[in-house]
Image 1: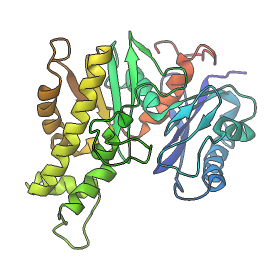
Image 2: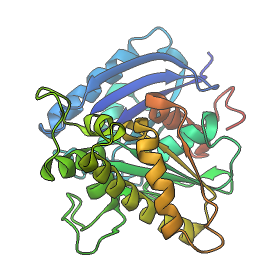
Image 3: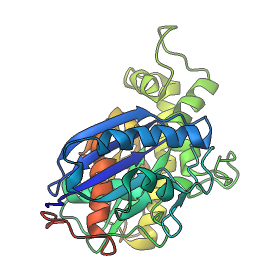
Length: 321
């Protein structure tokens, strides 16, 4: 029997997605549900189980050799547990155990969602062929993952590169993670909208979009408060990126997630701010590029994390990871 597929799972504060992924990174079958993030642990797990059920019922399930999970973090790959900041019902939640109740004894690789996206972009996206990369997702939260010496480096617990919870303002707002002045608390889409609304911005249409996407539209039209909200986000991102690059000498930053869809509204002030923060010679020429895999990055990356984990398995057709 051929076992050449991975069942990939991408768990975030907004959606839970699953897919069957082959050794070239193509998604053969995809299932997605909204994340009931404000509800109980059991309710969130029930949504995940429904997604997994949509995979196990597919005709190709017999070809699945492993399960890869990229979850909002922090995660603990050693214990198989997760405590996502944006899913308060899950604290030290036994995620791997819960997944195995549906998928059986297949080997499971668990990494943070940022690490999964890094693996995906390195395999099939903007980081392909690059050796030292920070991949970031700027969305409901801010996450990240690291490629160093051409390999995914998730760290012992699967959280390495979690740039969203680097503090860039020691007098800043309290973050849900318990820290203060975190990149995420300033730069995420949620907090771009929060800042703009608190400063007095409103969409031109009273029924208009008050999320970060709506702020981005206003920023493109030159609204000063919307521009200020994105500039503030960009400066927080730049400070976190510069600190990371100084520590581990990355050469490229790949940025994805919903907020990255704002394009130059985000990237232009980010590149300007980096010139202020990344000043040492070995970080001065950081390249910043948009991610290429879009909403499927986490799923492709969860599969790639499986194939890069020698403790899991080596899939047929996975050469080139």
